[in-house]
Amino acid sequence: MLNSTLKLYRNAYRGLSRHSWYLALVMLVNRSGTMVIPFMTIYCTQQLHFSISQAGIVMALFGAGALAGGFIGGKITDRHGFYDVQIGALLTGGLLFLLLGQQQSFIHICIVTFVLSLCNESFRPANSTAVAYYSTDATRTRSYSLNRLAVNLGWACGGALGGFLASIDYHLLFWVDGCTNILSALLLLKLMPRSSYKKPHQNQLVLIDSSTSAYRDSKYLIFIALTAVFGTCFFQLFTMQPVFYKTLWHFSERFIGFLMALNGLLIIAFEMVIVHKLEGKKHALHYISTGILVTGIGFVFLNAMHPAIWVALLVVLLITLGEILSMPFMNAFWIVRTNAGNRGQYAGLYSMAWSGAQIIAPALGSQLILFGGFNLLWWVLGGACLVSAIGFIWLYQFSVRKESALAI
Image (cartoon, rainbow, N blue to C red; front, side, top):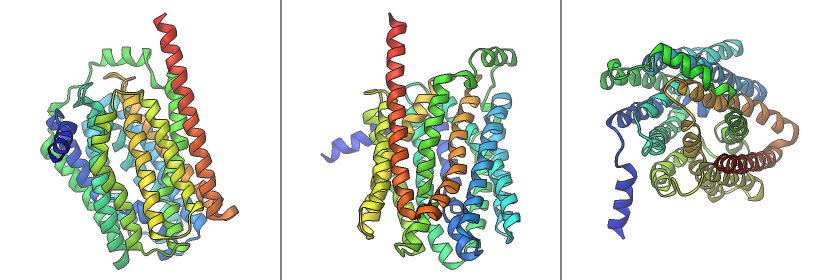
């Protein structure tokens, strides 16, 4: 039994390129310092004494900057390659995290938050393009899962450490987040020299872009819209759910940090193996719709169950399982539609879907809470996940019918 389990884990990680591991290491260092955003809502309301609506605006500006960063980052990546975009995003993001921690007024927090997010989130499409470049068709989904593993391992460390640091001094979060960004840039410069990437010839790039633009791929645009709906629900995990646990269930910052860390630890332990076992057996859209339904059930449980530690743990388990079933296969879906000349566009749109969700999530969540309390929020999230899952099922059926028609 033990030998078969070890073999399963070995096979899940086998065949990934050295550069895929380097990218994952850079991501691990970067995300180990991710602690500002998870605690930003609590920081704004508890330390700066902003209202929950003002905190929602600040979190929405994180999303607005990320939306702009995803678009700009995707465009620059297709023109100049993913290497310089990653370095520039990490360095500027690190410096701006340090600056954000020095701000006190609402307007200054808003301005720096937007600029920080724009610079920092332009990293995502460049990094996604790099992962695709250093992987093969056989290893691509697992390469993205490896990157997600690094993100979540870093998230587990950052969430746990962030909860501890927040209990001492919230300003420490900004220093750690900024310094790890800068360290990640230096590590990338050391491990992966610029010469390892060769861009497509400019004439070839123009030809590819003119014939297969992500912005004219109607099926992909539907996919992006459905992803944004799901993302709006998912981001409540990091924006309004911590406030819910703090204000209504009276959990400590340390336990809230532990819950965030548990999400990452479960992904670290099981995602690569689950993806390895499921990949290729069913269409990616099938797994995506199932995962979104499970996530919706997790949110509804916050209404269906009484306040208790075990309920919070069960909710983390359900939402994490939904994340494992959906997000790796979302990457698998969009990457097969790309080529070397338009991958930045597709990666940028995918990043923008999540960034758009970051804008909507805190604004919608805070308004629903003000209108009908947290109970209304969790019911709405459950319903929105159901709508998104049905949309992905329809997209799957539409894809199958279209593929059958083409075969005839």
